[in-house]
Image (cartoon, rainbow, N blue to C red):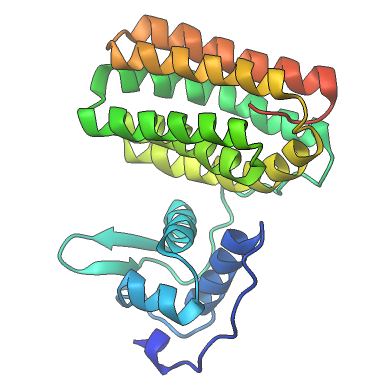
Length: 247
């Protein structure tokens, strides 16, 4: 296992770009000739300990590598290398800091995806899915109360990821992880600049709660309508402020 042969990696600074840095580091190791297709990586805890990061950060990085098709979890085997070159398809640049128009184009891309994901989630969600959504909503509410922007971003993305998970279609989850990678840093920057706009945060939270209620009730039409309302309001908030506030 190449991970175990490498020299220890210096401690990584836990900043807003940590997940991006871990993703790029692992991708570089996979594509740098250290691995062959079909090779199995060490357990997550060993990798996390080597990189001195939490399991949460590592799992997010691994999710992005899965979305790119570099690795895949195989039952009874582990995390397996599927290719050793990064694919050229479905690659988009992260919006530049402060470029609301670039972020808006990504939000527009979300519109159809979020609506259909919510519809399927209302039909297929399990109690486990609902518990994950509820936990994310509670974390968002606490983040608003604490004015903790980073925690709010993580909880917000966690809620939408739980909705994607509830579709029971792995491609929805992979595409969400792809979009989340494009949005995360911009959300952190823009929300830090507009954290004082607590009214908008509360409005967005009410939209999340309404969407959750429709999914919990197993009502696909209501879920579709509320997802559409949420994304349209996200776009409106962005257009009106030229900065991406709570979405």
